[in-house]
Length: 150
Image (cartoon, rainbow, N blue to C red):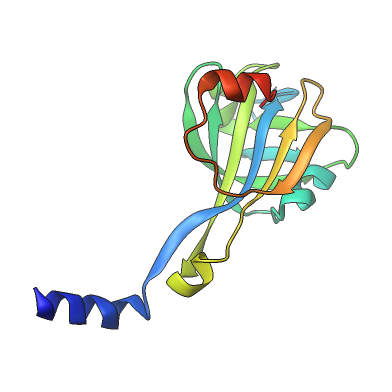
């Protein structure tokens, strides 16, 4: 056991963990284009608020149908509230569906201690309700989340 602890301590100096970097919560799908090459269009102003870069890999969860998929971000026109499913992802949602859009970063254990993801919560017209660096939230019930409007 002592040998394991020593080996783990040595590894932890170079170990990295994948943590949430950015999240756009409750984004409403505004369009879908099956014949586009692929990706998810996000208005550039919203993407920039959470630090999403063009072509950055994202994980998307559809709150209406439970679908989860990976794709990448392309910037749409700022101020338009665009959230558009492109290519094959157009089959994974419908206009009006609410999405959670997430990106992740690999951080050292030391960096992870102080990391906080950037989170934007949107209303049904993709207007920003809240933008923050998220702090750990433990034990919130579905009711508490609903009351908070998230």
